[in-house]
Length: 315
Image 1: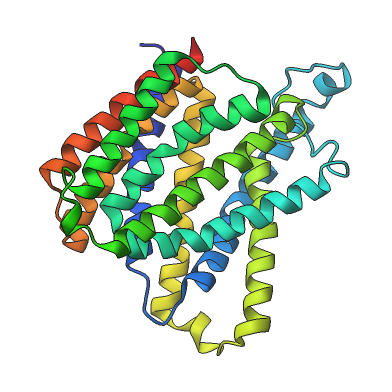
Image 2: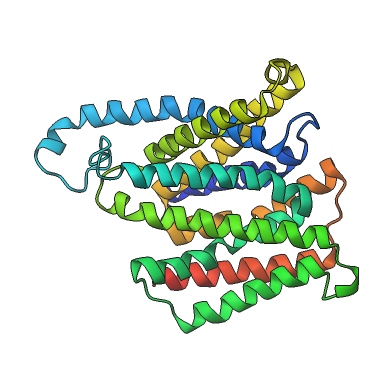
């Protein structure tokens, strides 16, 4: 095993832990904090986390300035070239991810950690559909078949082997919200993919920019329409939640991008596919949720489907 593969496995496994923790922390939200403020503060804490990383990238760009001058199109680090022509796209992406951050807390409060984390693994399905519609990427028959298997696994998990009479409608509403989030996330990622292809920004820079826009929009509108008390921000329990949620969410993103820097997309996606298992373990011991046989069976179908779909995309 080469050194990059080892590093990719390590960062990927750490990423599984952080991504698995995200719904757990979200569900430990203090009752005084609503989903809107939670989304706003998560974005702003992520900005603080990614700011020094962006500075490191800029320093690396400066040290490789000569390569850029020589027209090296493969140079990894770039200033935000062409930001003026992309300004409206960036604002749209900021609005989109800001809305999603709020819906994230609402969705998980309705589904619970286990059902919610399984629902979010449908990103790979929406990725291939939007890649086909927007970027004209190819879809294989095997990808279509295992997309059906993926949703079958999700349905088995949510319905507990199709016990439809016992389904909680609240969970179904939450699943619908998280499916919408997953779709909108992939819309945002698909629209920004050409920016990366043209070397106009790095993923780290894009995360930083979108969180600035999302955070500013959310916190400003929150202060205008809700006029909260200052104690809401400085209460120790609330401040701890803001910092923890932002740190866990931001760390998950950092691990994802580090894994991508060492491995290709299909391998990185495969390594992070078991995140629902991590969420289930944390939810069982921390939140007291029950991980059933139906959840286990559905999770296995989902993970197998993800591995086959992403490897088909690579081929």
